Length: 403
Image (tube, rainbow, N blue to C red; front, side):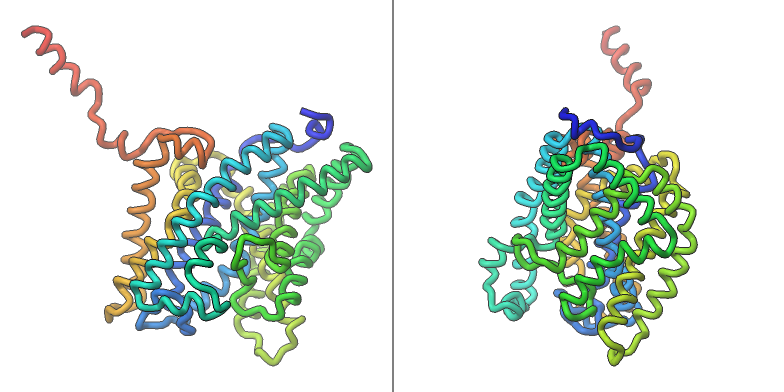
């Protein structure tokens, strides 16, 4: 490693609460997509015969903070990994675990989604917004894996800026600046407001707050998503370098979550006649009170490894990579039934996790795919459950030897 790589940093001890929180953000995305068919606007495929104000409310609140939280945690863990293994190994790891899944899974998942649109009789809706054909989208769009593409952009920008700063002022000064920024961001109220500035700027640049930040439609960098998520990535990066910053955020977890709930109510009830700037401030601050509140709660309440939480955290990446066509097919099969919304959701939330977790356990967890996505093999839980104890097989072996 170079001297820049040995720039002093924080401890690299595993933070189980934040690891679980990162997985939770991905699982929350699966829940969000399962709610989409029930939105009153009917902008999703499948478009269920029933709509639900509750589902619409939940989707709005989830959109406030989910990807901001994920990108903040990506920045936090990113700095930790970089200072443990060095810049080159960090970039190589990001290439293997982020770029390759995007390149391999992105087209497959998008082709599946396009097929579902066509089978559901909604093929024309793919091309309506931008006058683009499904084949163009297959080549240009990252589908629901757009966040991996934006994350790669955040990594590249951060590493380049860090390199330029180190070349200009030296690693010690860069570390000092990072620590100061992290401690400032951990300051109650002020830290939330500072973190929310890129989010606010992105909303104003976008020109509306409905449905949160628009996801990019192609793999090319787009200013609105890059601004808000690069801001979140840098916040996490600085918090990791801020010494006691995570502890200070932890102490304010309850206040942040109470503020997040109050601000979310304000976002849901504010009239459209209120100026965009005020509504954008509410959305940005609400998103960051949720993100920092959940960050603090994760540090506070999950301090040691719990087997089931670790299992779900490990499985969440695979689950999110492949979940969308599975959730959409389930929605298509249920769309025309007269069952209540809650019953349909219970069915989706029962069947889909079984398929996603089952495929993870049997196909990923103890295979080369698990090494690729999660960095190491882990024992398959299902195989272990159905494997006969050695003590049950030994008498048979002994009997054969006597014959």
